[in-house]
Amino acid sequence: MLKFGSKKNLNNENKCTIRLLDDSEVVECEFQTYHKGRYLLDFVFNHLNLIEADYFGLRYVDQHRQRHWLDPNRNILRQMKGLYPLLVCFRVKFYPCEPLQLQEEVSRYQLFLQLRRDLLHGRLYCQQDDAAMLAAMLLQAELGDYGEQTDGYVQQCRLLVRQTPKLEAKIEEIHATLTGITPAQAEAQFLRKAVTLDTYGVDPHPVKDQKGAQVYLGLSHSGLLTFQGSRKTQHFRWNEIQRLNYEGKMFIAHITIMEIVAH
Image (tube, rainbow, N blue to C red; front, top):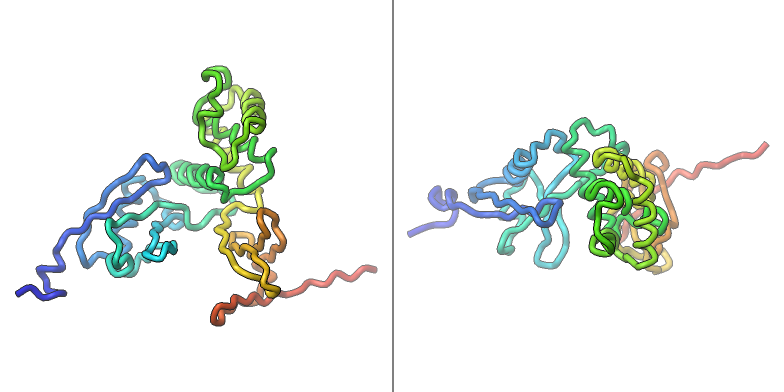
């Protein structure tokens, strides 16, 4: 008779699919029943030759369609209970405040891929001029100099969440001005531009304010932000926040109000 928790049962092999930042690339990892999240993390870090691993993590979606980060210190199967097949996504977990200060080229490239994805899915929201500039930098990094592509090449590339013919013409116009810039230089320019945007590194969560109005709450390296639609409404920097409380369904931020006295 086989009992749950027996040594024989602990040696059962399980398989998890890991989707990388390029959605076309997936890897599979076999693990034992007793393994913790750290095992999967180390597997993908070794696969990508990532040394600056603290910025990255693995995310999964539970049975209620809620997203979670895989905890490295907890059992994999207990965290992902009831899920089959097992699927996690490799993502940037902590966005650096100075992307170009990352020491490893592979780290900067993975951040570049994450921001490319954020732009495509509307998470890195920005004005159309900024979006066109970012998209043109992507084309320079991935396709090279303008003029080496066929007609309608911008339309064939999935770059932005709302990609109109007018915006595509603007992207092509900017791309033509980037001739001579190497892929590495284009990626660096993309990172420099992305970090200046209000939505850089923000994972927005729908909440209601004290009046019951729908807003989005996000955290980033620069502080606590709220948005109404795509418009930033408040930005409290970390040095202005005394403490954070979570009571029931209410999230409370205690803010230090700085008074400016005119003389």
